[in-house]
Image (cartoon, rainbow, N blue to C red):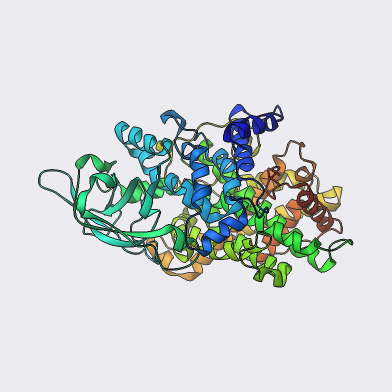
Length: 590
């Protein structure tokens, strides 16, 4: 099927949308359906873009060239360019909808085929000159790639270890030097966005951002070999060495010393996008688990598998709720999303990792069928998820955002703010376009804590109804009680960086992040318009909140008798009808 034929077919399918959807959302879903159809049945062994072919490329430690070429021809690069510069990027939540067909096949495919271009160019969209933005947009719209070259962080792993140094030249510009061995797409990027050290002294003004065209750097640039290891790192990661490399003055993005501030502002988008797309990758493993639980059976799924299968499904909906709220907040509340974005990146990969462990027990010995379309996704995602989340260094970076804010939030924000606009939680509600220039660092507010308090108050009015609604009301109150306890504990946190060196305060950031996840679940459930009866019913929210409450160790009510059954029934329905396991329940290629 050609791209033109696929566009016509998916355009008709995506046109059957509800009146509540905005034109932007309808168009994003149409583009997602087009990619889903282009990539084809992931379980067809003859499909060159199926899971079998993707896993085989991974075993060879090579990018899946045929599939990446297909995505480039389909114009995937335009998804990472803001609409004002000729691309299709309007809102990050819509971007994630478009990208999910790619990540549903393979997390590494999503990173290799372009999402790192979004991560790299975010600094350009936030602070670049008109000329830099125009040139960067032209590169991505033509199918090129941009690669981000991180500065070194504390707790550094291979990706975040080492950095480049840029010295001012007497005649203007910079001299770039240093070596970094692990960079995504370094060997095939058309543009590098380098966070280089420009001041010897440690501090927030020590780094600057440089936008580099590798073709214009001459012999001062050397591309290093790929990382000699299997998996995502072996196929996508290689290194760079700069030796007395002359860089022109107009390569500077923003101001000298602005690198750390730009990273703090723009990484919000990256963190939320990673969380939202990783949910799609985990959905493929859940599909394998349901296959394992139903294969060769004429009877219902074994009772011992009800809780792990339904529980992981609820976890995916919880992760999607948190990621979607954060993604939408980037557009609606761009100056107030900094802490929520860090908490989302903190919570979602951890919940997904725990989900993979539960699904491994369901899949059993079939999980050793590495590289097979039916069951290979478990092993592949278990290896790739830590890389995508930057491992412990990524967790530490999120803690470094959250912990210093906890005392201020406890003293000034929690249980004192007004709730955010209802449009934040309503699918189909119109939102402003994402403007990277408006993204800001933590302002001391917490609209999700206010949302939790509002949800608990409204549910308290229906506590006497009984059944699942009573359980939901009890859970909302339990999480609100946890927030009150956190408020008292966090008021004792010492100011400054000292808190980051004390594990006791870091534990409070764990608990707080899970409370935000609970707030997102409640808000997402309340925001349903009834078009999806399953999401409008409370069963999934009750199960998701119960599992998060168990992780926190707070008192939670016993699950009502029909709760697991309702969630499991929806899970099996989606499996049999070929729908995704996220909030969208998208129809998938089969």
